[in-house]
Length: 177
Image (cartoon, rainbow, N blue to C red):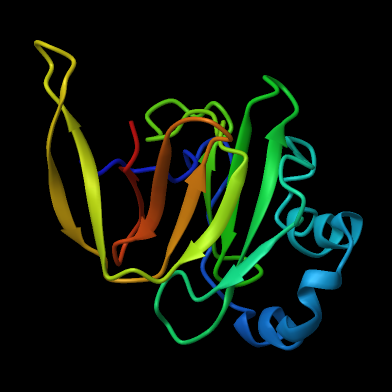
C-alpha cells in the first residue's frame, strides 16, 4: 500500500531543488556535523525551524545514502514537531528539495515515528507483512521489488518497516509483526 507522505504544501511549502552541489560537497564529513549545525544548514533556510526541532531519538544525528537513486547521497534528519511533540524524519535530496515523514501529519503513512533503530537497507526485495483483517493473523507476505535503497526502521523489541523512494514519493512498507 502506498501513501503520500509529503508534508502538506499549505503547512510547509515544498520547493524545487536548486542547490544540490553545495548540499553534497562535503558528505564525507557530514556525519561529524553537530545537530545544531545541521539545524542551521537545513531547517532554517527552509523556514522549518519554527515548527520543527532536531531530536536525539537516534544516536547518530543523521543518515546518509542515495535514497532517491539519482547518484548523489541524500541526508535524513530525525526531527520532532514543536506543536504536538510527534517524531518524524526529513529526507533532504538537496538543500531545498525535502520530504517529511511523520510529525503528526494527517494522511501520512507514518503519523509518528516510533522506531528507535535506523539503518540503510540495500536489499532489492522487501516482504511486506500482510494481516488478515478478519482474524488478525499474519498471512503470506507481499513481495515488493525495491527501486532504490531504503531506510530500515525497527523498534527495540517489536515491529519493523522500510521507507523507500518509489520515483515520486516515499512509501512505507511494514515488514515486521
